[in-house]
Amino acid sequence: MKAKRPLVEKLKSHFIDNPVSFHVPGHKGNMACMDAGTHFWDRILQYDATELPGLDNLHCPTGVIKDAQDLAARAYGVENTYFLVNGSTAGILASLLAVTHPGDTVIVDRHCHSSVFNGLMLGRLKPVYIGRPVDDITGIPLSIDMQEMDRVLEANKGAKAVIITSPSYYGVCSDVKAIADRAGNNGATLIVDEAHGAHLKFGDRLPASAVDAGAHIIIQSAHKTLPAMTQGSWLHVKGKGVDRDRLERMLGIFQTTSPSYLIMASLDAARYTMETTGAQRLKEILEQAENARQSINDIGSGLFCPGSQYFRKKGCYDFDETKLLINCIGAGISGDELDYKLRTTADIYGELYDMANWLGVITIAMKQSDLDRLVEGCRGIKPQRPAKKIPPACLDNRADCNGADPWEVLDRNCVSTALDKARGMIACSGIIPYPPGIPLVCPGERISARSIELMKEYQALGISIKGCKDGRVEVVEE
Image 1 (cartoon, rainbow, N blue to C red):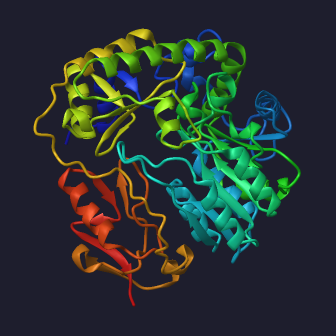
Image 2: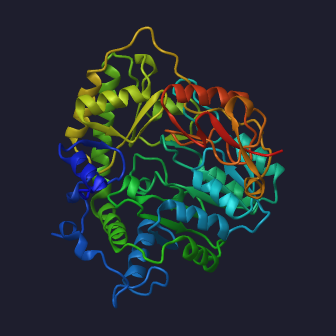
Image 3: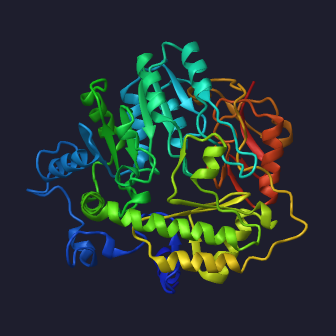
């Protein structure tokens, strides 16, 4: 049999026609924006090194890695920055376990990344969820309700930590400063998953970064919005309330002992780029993105590209306008249909689509021609009449439906049951439609009738659902 290289060949064929990237990683394949000097990235394998003399060691840095981390800390105005080579997931897991002990209560943004729920299980922690209101037009979760935050903190004064996501995948920002003040007054450590906001520090027109809003631990996926390689992230620590030694022990557990020097070098280069030319590049691309947003809204096909003004009117604290969101409801099509049309007619690949929206990620690596191509691709969209019924992207899940703490389901027998019979049962794992990747049901929550109804609607639209296979889900045997 002839030897094959299916992944290699697919990667080569995908990029042969130079598709336009509105997705991560933030470098968009544009080596010119990765300021590492002449001929660095085109000799990439040569620099795929290990812990040689003079190259330092990520797990006990004293030389060049320490210097690079210190420069990143200075750029972000924090006391400590740690390079993450296993993505923000490693930082989230390490942070949760560093500031808590088994049995502790943690206030959890219900729309957090799945790694948070894994951390709750690994740490045997007790979550108290804070849901979010959902926009009735776009179906997108809005900012954390501060009255709800006050209520939950008042009812859980012994909580050891608060963990939130800001900005969200869609660009919605919460009032981190107010949350930090309230968490601090209650003696809780505030952890902010700012995976989608590593660029915020460098843009005057952008929402404030959590590093400037009083958060204690901030995790950022540099690879998502900066010119860094996939998995390249960093964890920032600010203030005296975090035990650095314990945090470093946890990072040692969750990070590989064979860290990629290419990823670390890309983090160093990304920091340098943002410090030297990042602010000006962000200013330029934000102006271009705003023009594209307005052009799409002027097409008249029913496509709607909301910005910060729209979300503030909806009660959001702020919105990151490097997220180019296109709502498809008015055009009578779903997000996946818009994604298909843009891919097949304009060779444009977005970051995500859900039932009602398409999302593009704008970074300093993009060009005016990329945005022009998106606008022209949208001009080719013909409204569908009558418009089809599109289910919401997310549930307003502020109602309490906990059946068990997430870690408890690890010690319980789980059985497979038909979706139609799962109402009221406790989920063994997260049930997560992707896109957008926000759990309909978290591990330990009871499955509601509305969740079952939405799962069926998602599947009918071809949306994959992690935790639901062949019409069956894993539930706790009761």
